[in-house]
Image (cartoon, rainbow, N blue to C red; front, side):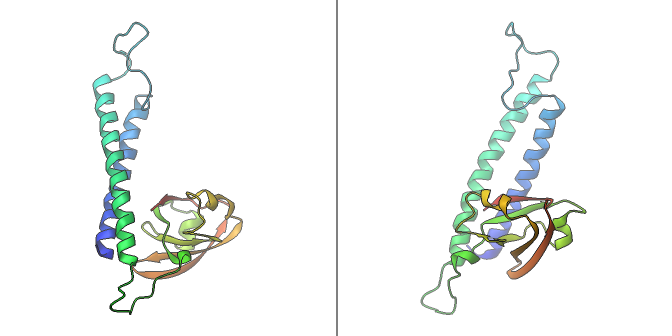
Length: 177
């Protein structure tokens, strides 16, 4: 698998994220989530909601979440393949663990600190302050890094870009790879 194939998988996963968000909006419009009962206390279908639509929406969300998980695994394997060293060629040096991508920017809010810093949807995070692939702890470590001025390193279209974010709130959605 090459870099372009991995980027295409990431784009597919982003589309699934958007679709899941839209379906969750359908549930919110009905004032239900994934767990609320669809029957009343007497066991009859609730008459204040569109039960068939909610059932169909829930099934669609579950299917898409499964697809998302599968794509995430493919992306992970693809990234590992892209980063493997071709020992016979000897021309590619293996990046250090601090230079491996560990997350990507899914969306950037207009007018946010992330947008002002130059972050774009699809950027892959290599460093976020002191956080990198080897110590991000499921992205939990990112919360401690925003402290007024945070240095970031991202990969965009094969290029390494250094950025600085100013502020305490980033204003973007970061998802793990």
